[in-house]
Image 1 (cartoon, rainbow, N blue to C red):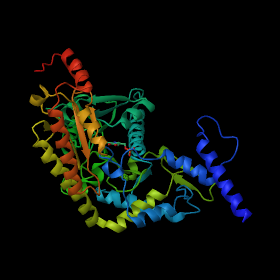
Image 2: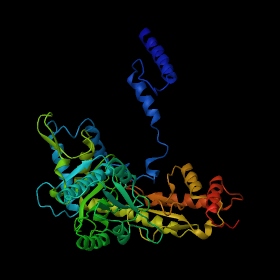
Image 3: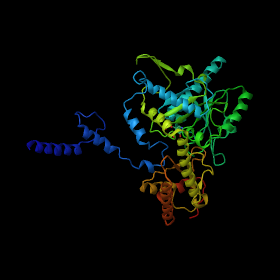
Image 4: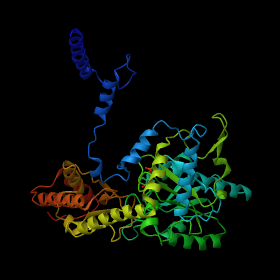
Length: 469
Ligand SMILES: Cc1ncc(COP(=O)(O)O)c(C=O)c1O
């Protein structure tokens, strides 16, 4: 009995302590903390600010089925690099690379296709970029030419990874501006900024800012002529972070991959439309000869000689298991069905939003299950609100639909984006559209402009724009 009382007292007292203990922010706490209390403190910090399914800003997978989740949780302690302890993980990783390489029509005939796993598209893009840079360097050295001024050509709608790559490796980034007239990378404009120091051109399948695909076939055809005329060997690295798992299922006949002559490498995110929890990326080279030897490193202290290509050494194996599971579980038909559903919902939202008098879609096309729109220019002349106000209003109902300004050359343009992922239903789309319509109806009743509108008009007026209220 006493014991029970003591327990109660203890529980009450420690619970009180728990609620009064501040979270460590600068120094390691002096004492240890009971696990349940430590758990609660960390858990309390992780409450999501929006529901993952209502987060239409992210491209990254927030749903996997129970078996995938179980498999990945069971592998939480597995380090991919420990090949001697878990030899089959490396085999499954190799099989994933084979499957992806074949999905992208690799011409490579060997049993193991040439590729690498990354923590996301960022690592995969960097590996593709480094390989292009090293190949260029070797060619230049063999020709007795200087190698101190490499450059890379990409549209101004590049994802930040390319800025990181160019900064970290000290490569000049040559940006080809996109505009309303040229909404994707223009092949002629790209070639106009190429020269003997161009390590590669990076078209994007699934441009982060717009959802569109750069025309890679047109670029390849123009580049073929350009390389023949100049004697250069400028290759293409396709950043297919989103499109790499969409195009093969939605537009299998479209040539954007290794079916094109100058595509030497392609990267994608396993954790986007590969449908795996973060973080997972893949890069594949056309053939082993395009992966410079300097990029493979061997270590001998894990019980065998282990050769690896990657920026990281240790990395979680669970995502690789998740990817391999998805390949088995869904197969080609399953992936096609899931991607088609996402496309159908995106196209439905695109049509409905395009039909609203206050909005204008950026493109009439929906290449991937995501799209952007802006305020109709005529409506904008008298509107008392901005897309930032709409973002804030939608957030009150749990939706995360980001408003943002476009990249260089059209940076004064404010757009809004929806990314449709697996699990977004027609019913959810209708709820979103109803919430957008209700918000607009309220905005239309405003007598005075919102704070964000005032700031927007002030900025725009300085650039000569006229408003009619
Ligand atoms: C075109 C493109 N490239 C690269 C990345 C970086 O991908 P990750 O987040 O997988 O590193 C993204 C992410 O959105 C992207 O859209």
